[in-house]
Image (cartoon, rainbow, N blue to C red; front, top):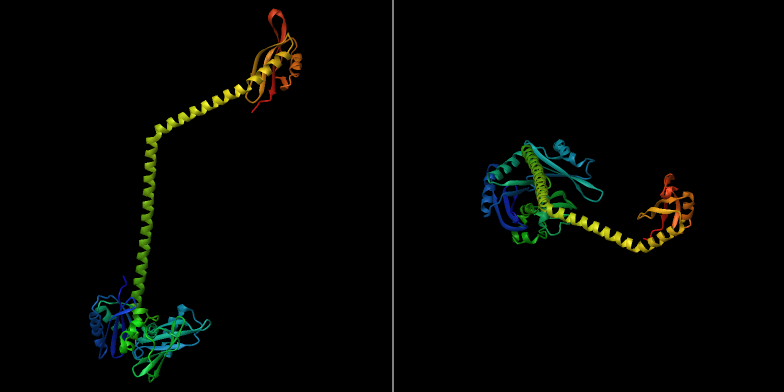
Length: 395
C-alpha cells in the first residue's frame, strides 16, 4: 500500500498543500496568513482539510523566504566539509539579518568535470514555527528545504534552464544531472508555462501555484534547513533506529542459531532412537552377511579345489614316480599360494632332493630345516627330511 505524503509550499503570505498518493494529486488546498504567529494554525487547518489521515509531510520554502547561493566552480572541499564551510561563511554568502540563519549546502555535479556549491539559508525562528505547526498537526516532517530543489519534479522535461512563474517574477532554475544547482529570480513573466506532469496539469490554471507543493510529494528537498535541536533529534533518532536494528539483527541471529541447534539436537536424538530400534535387525543382517561371505568363500575354495584336483593328482603322481623305492613321503601340503611342503624318509636326503628337482611342476625345491638321521622299520637308518618348493597355481 502506497502511503500518502502532504507537500507544503510556504511563501511569505500563503501556504499551499498537496496530498500526494503514488505521484497523483488526491487533494490540494491553500490558505493565507498574516504573520508567523498564524502559521502553525494554518498548517494544522490544511492538514485537517485534506480529508485523509496523513502522518508524513515535506515542506518546501518559496523563493521569498529562503536565500539561495551558488558558487561556480565549487571550492576544493570534501562533501563532508561543505556544510561547515557554508555555516562559517554565512555572513559573507547571505544577506545580513538580525535573526540567526540555518544553512545547508551540497556539492552538485554540473558536468562530468565541474561541480557547483549549492547553498541555502532561512531564518531559524521561521523554521521553528513551521516545525512546531507540523508537530501540533500530528505531522512528521521528513524534509524541509528550498522549493527550487523540488520544482523540477513538477515538469515533464527538466532541461536546463527551466522558468517557473512566481508572482510578478519568474524563478529560473539551472538543472544538472543530479538536480538544481542554481536559482535566479528574474523580474517580469513572459507568460509561458512549463510542461507540467499530468497529475499537476489536472489542476488547470492553479497548477503553477501548487507546483512546489506537488514536487515535495514526489521527492524530498536535497538541502535540509533544520534548526540545531531538530537536526540533533533526527540524528539521535537515526542512531536509536540503527541501534534497534542492530539489536534486532543480533536477536534474530541468536534465534536462528537456537533454532538450528534445537533442530540439530532433535535430529540427532531421532536418529539415535531409530538406530536403537533397528539395532536387532541390523545385527541380524550383519550376521547373515558374514555367514553369506563365509559360505561364498567356502564355495570358492571348493570350486578352486575341484578345478585343481586333476593337476594335484598329476603332481602327486610325478612326485611319487620321481622318488626311489627306498624313499617315501609321510606328509604333503599344498597351500593356496602354490607353496608345497613335503616330509618323508630316504636313505640319503640329498638324493631325494635331487630326484624331486626332476619334477617339472616343482620349482626351486630346497630343504626346510635340518636333516635328521632316524631309525626306521627293520632297524634301518634313514634321513628324515622336509622340503619346500613352489608349484604354479592356476587362477
